[in-house]
Image (cartoon, rainbow, N blue to C red):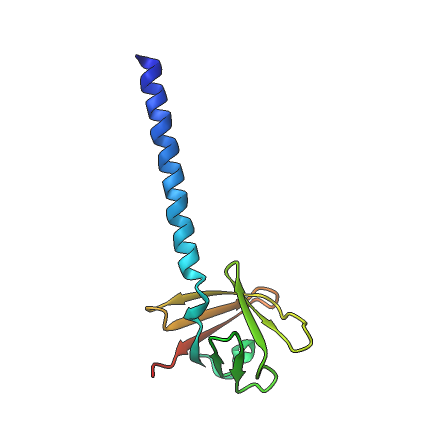
Length: 126
């Protein structure tokens, strides 16, 4: 009887672990949705740490960037592993920056861990 109870307890524990991992994975995948970036964003830190993407940046659905920083116009971006990376026309990849969304995906926080800088952008609602 004790062995059956122990076996049942272990099975329930394993199922709980498996399902909690599925939920966490699903939440992470939703946060990494590249379509969340699409649109125009204005820096909340104009002139401060906005060098990450300029004071105003537009992410397009085709994977390109438009920016008030002419260095970025027409460059590509990729979203992977919780980071966004700029890909320059020569194929060189910029520093991957971690990101997070808040306020119903209208605030974007980018962090450059190499330089320990953070920039916050607000989405322009059209």
